[in-house]
Every structure is written in C-alpha cells, then in structure tokens.
Amino acid sequence: MNLLELHLHQFRSYHESVFRFEPGAIHILEGANAQGKTNIIEAIAYISNLRSFRTRNLRDLTEHGQPSFSIDAVCEHGGIREPLRIHHEAGKKKLFRFGNPVASFSRFVGTLNAVLFSPDDMMFFSGAPVLRRRFMDTELVKLSQSYTSALRTTQKLLKNRNALLKKKQPEPFLLETVTEQLVDTQGTVIRQRQGFVNRLNERLREFYPVFSGGTEHLKIQYRTFVDTERNLETQMKDLYRKTRERDLRFSVTGDGIHKDDLVFLLNGYPMSAVGSQGQKRSALLALKLSLCSIIQEKTGQYPVFLLDDVFSELDPVRRQKLIDLIPQNMQVFITAAEPVQADFGNRMVCVHHIKKEINGKDKQNESQ
Ligand SMILES: Nc1ncnc2c1ncn2[C@@H]1O[C@H](COP(=O)(O)OP(=O)(O)OP(=O)(O)O)[C@@H](O)[C@H]1O
Image (cartoon, rainbow, N blue to C red):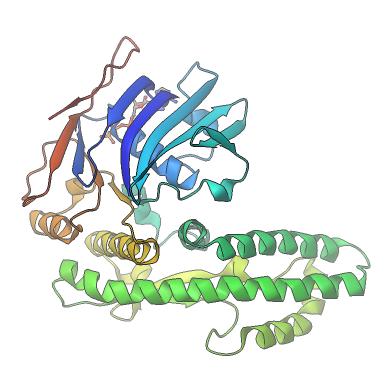
C-alpha cells in the first residue's frame, strides 16, 4: 500500500499544499522545529484511522481562522489507485472514496492503512488501560469487519444494560435479554483480541531481540474478565448471574471487555514498572514493526509506516537496526529536525524540506 499524493487544504499550518510521494520509498520530512512535519504525519494517520493522535477536538486540525479543512489523498493498493477525501465543516465530517460519498466510518477507515510511531506513545505502557484497548480496537477495526460490528454492538448493549441498571425496578426479562446478547458479542471481541495478541507475540519474539541484543524478551499478556482458555460463553453467563445483584446496587456493569487491558512483560516483569526509557522505545518500535508484519500477512500488503521524531532519541546502533528491519517494499515517512545519518542500503530515499511559509501561502515542498 502506498500514499501517492496528499493535498492539504486549511489543515493545521497548511493553507493549500500538495505533496507527491514515490511508492515503496523512504520519505524523510526534514525541517527545523514547528515547521509542519508532524502535521503531515497527522494528516496521513487521520486518513487511516479517522482520528487524530494529538487531539480529540477537530477544530484544532482546522487552520486558525478558517471554517473548514479537507484532506485529499491518492493511495495505491493492489495496483489500484484510489482517491480518498475527508472534508470537515461545521462539526460534520464527510468522507469520499473515488469521489463518491461514504456513509459509514467502517467503509472508509483503513482504506489507507498507516502504522504510527510517535514520541507521545511513550505513555503507552504506564498510561490508563484505555490507551491499550484503543490500540487493539484501532488496529482490529481496520482488519476485521466482524470485529467492528461486534465491538459497536457490545458498546451499545453495555449502554443499554447500564441504563436498565439505573432504573429503580428494571424489567428482569429485559435485563436477561440484553445480558445474553452481551455474552454473544463479547465472545467475538475477546477471541479476536486474544488472536491478535498471540500473533503480536509471535512477531515480537523475532523483532524485540534485535533491539535488545538478544538478552531480553518481551511478551504481551491479554487481560480480560474471563479465562480465554475455557469456554467463554459459559463463564460469562455464570459470572453475570453471580454479579447481577452487585451491578444492580452500583447501577453499572462491573465486568466486561470495557475493562480489558494488555500487560507488557519484560523478562517476566511489567514494562511499566521496570522498563527504562530506551527499553520502552525499543519495545514500541518492535510492537509497531510486528503490527506492520501482521497487516501484511492479513491483507497481502504492508501499511504505510509513519515514524515521527524517532531518530532524535535512538542511539546510532538502534537507529541502524530499525532501518535494517524495515521491509523492502514498505513506504515509510520519517520526520527529522536534522539530516539523518544512517545507511539506507539500496532503498530509494526522498528528502522533503519542510518549511512554514510566513505569508500564509505555502509553496510546494522541495524534494530531492
Ligand atoms: N490549527 C492550526 N492552524 C495554524 N497553525 C497551526 C495549527 N495547529 C498547529 N499549527 C502550527 O503548526 C506548527 C507545528 O507543526 P508540527 O507539529 O508539524 O511541527 P514539527 O515540524 O513537527 O515540529 P517539531 O520538530 O518541533 O516537532 C506550529 O507552527 C503551530 O503553530
């Protein structure tokens, strides 16, 4: 999969800018601080996930003083060139594929699949469990329609069940029905989350030792409210029967996939407790490379790999290891404040000099 063109209109610091990218190449977005390098990465990740990794407020993405923004992209997958468009105005997002409006989020998300490494990810291990659940959901939603549908239904059912639990005397039959449906849809979510973690672990066994020098091992444990080795549906039914009174007392569903988490174990100990900054960075890079490999295995194509400010914190040895691990045909975007000193072998490398225009009009960025 490749991104061939990107047209930003009133997006962040870009008033009107067009970028063209070689397929399969390593693109270095080079420039001083605050020139708009991450804004480009953010726009690409936004097309992939329909979510910004820096803000939840879409107004932040709109150029100051403007009423709307749009991102137009041309991507290539399996030999097909596909134009994609996102237009945001008055709090509403409109999506287009091949120039035709797309009504549902799930028909657009992942059309251009991008995997991102960002310095903000360093909170991934120690932050709240929602970060790690969001990671699983963001990736699985792009890879599996059945996951998307089971997740959305579960979220609706949990809302309905909680609304029932808040009533003074909830209708027992209704509570029973919604709980049974919840058991069904959560089974699908749990199985796919467990399968995803198993595949990540297989890849991590290959990638993490490259960064650690082979002396450490990294493993992900999927933590959910039932034992994934036993029959899920039977366990859930039993559990919801036992916790019914408690849920009624607290007016909320206490157990479910909304509490799931991932625990990263470094040599058997939680990464959040024992990992150094360097070990966390290596683990994140190994995780993102593992993800790229899983996407390739599932879809037949590598995603676009986005590396925001990755080199400033990596020592030269790890920097070279990362470059050596990037698969040959994968298109990569790397932001850097200084020229990158590394050996890219026979890879095509395109350097784009990114500079913010002071008069508000952006010129076409220069490539070499
Ligand atoms: N909504 C917006 N409208 C206009 N300009 C914006 C908007 N949001 C951010 N900017 C500007 O974008 C610039 C920051 O861009 P970006 O985060 O891409 O920088 P960068 O080149 O990655 O810098 P660094 O190397 O420091 O990380 C800043 O000048 C900021 O003022």
